[in-house]
Amino acid sequence: GNSVTQMEGPVTLSEEAFLTINCTYTATGYPSLFWYVQYPGEGLQLLLKATKADDKGSNKGFEATYRKETTSFHLEKGSVQVSDSAVYFCALRMFSGGYNKLIFGAGTRLAVHP
Amino acid sequence: GAGVSQSPSNKVTEKGKDVELRCDPISGHTALYWYRQSLGQGLEFLIYFQGNSAPDKSGLPSDRFSAERTGGSVSTLTIQRTQQEDSAVYLCASSPGMGERETQYFGPGTRLLVL
Image (cartoon, rainbow over all chains, first blue to last red; front, top):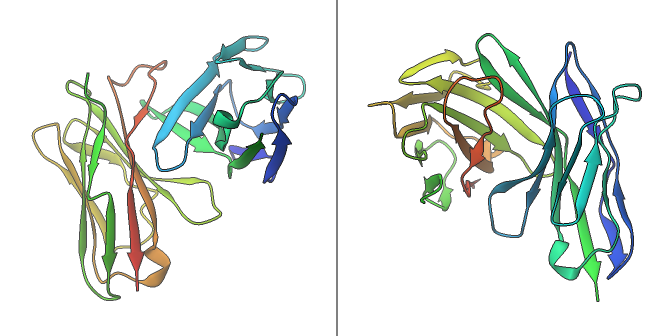
């Protein structure tokens, strides 16, 4: 079946450190891949996406590249800020049965300290 | 413009009571989704609406859960005879239609606590 696996948190970093949150997926067909972010007390927000192999999604200094050969979509940021502290969800989207279904990973909590 | 809104934002109830959770999608969005986020878990798909019909109810965890959508807009998720394991954040999302590239926009969620 379709599934998403992401690294367990919490991830604790100092400000300006490099961030990587690993995400791998299992899917039939060719899903689109997403990273969503959930800031404390808020709903899910779309952070970035990639719809086909080798696409790179980017937003707010975050990047992720759709790697079909390794079925991965790792999230990276070169220099994190305290304001990046949140829970990050990797997700795949399958279009099946006439609609889109999002399948999420368990989420990774990031805590950035000054 | 206005995003997806949900109410109440928080709900505390006693085991065995019924609860209703409301979702107002973005105006004009025809597709609506409900998800559940349990403590320490990822997001679990519950149900999908296209207009007023629900072609996929496969994620509803038991027959105590039901959902409806009237007028192609507001949706209500009802949990009957609540149990402690129903405690979770219930998220609603909407998207413009059924297209393959449609992005889902999420509401802030309703945090449900069953005592």
